[in-house]
Image (cartoon, rainbow, N blue to C red; front, side, top):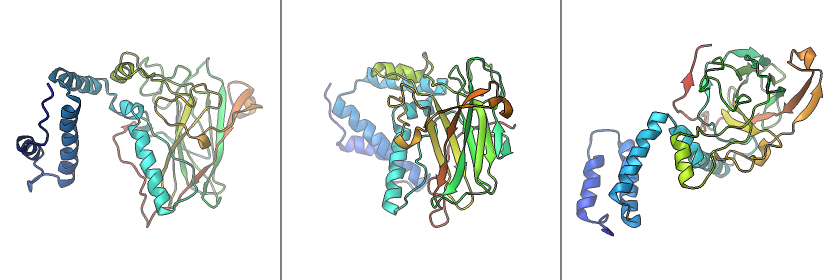
Length: 311
């Protein structure tokens, strides 16, 4: 078609009217963002000569993405969530904020409401014959290495099938299986007794994998464990670590891997005394260092819609 009309008065007037950018009513910030995004879309249609068929295929895809409930999954897979982390890292650098455990993406599978235990939490609620015992432990400190008492460490990860409780399509897991929270004591220590996770792939028939297939990419993640870590007078940390040795560590479709977030996995014995399913178990020690509030505020706190269940 090659009809380049973006810069015409008719199209610019249409954008102004559609977004009410010049009007007094409505949310000014929302209108600003919408006007920019809609302008970029219109300009892309011109520049790439996107056909009406392709536009409506995109609209239909968005409908399917919503029906599948995968918008947050796609945001991770297309690097949008990673890009937000890159921007926050850059802002920290400009502000001179140093130290602290590196952030990485939250992902779409957190569930609020897990019971908080003092010091240690056993989170392998459901039996899983295909997963061996794992102990995750460490210390929460500030950037000077001082232990933080009363810090809350939240943890969640997949089972041996690559499914997360609450989102498990098989319905085989209880709500807070492999999810928990620990409150640290004066020593800043936390511990989770759990089972070794595996990585997961996007639902094979879902909208996210459909898009990835079109661009020739896989939708798989290495085995990993997610964390939120918070403490008074410190910024909340969102991070995760990968399980050492997983072949997808540097080929994560969600781009969450960072060199500092691959702790060693140590073989241990004595699991029976800890109440684990086997005497032989694996241990991962991972310490968290939290950065202080910025002028009394947590400027890296992210507000987004999250699932919640009452324990």
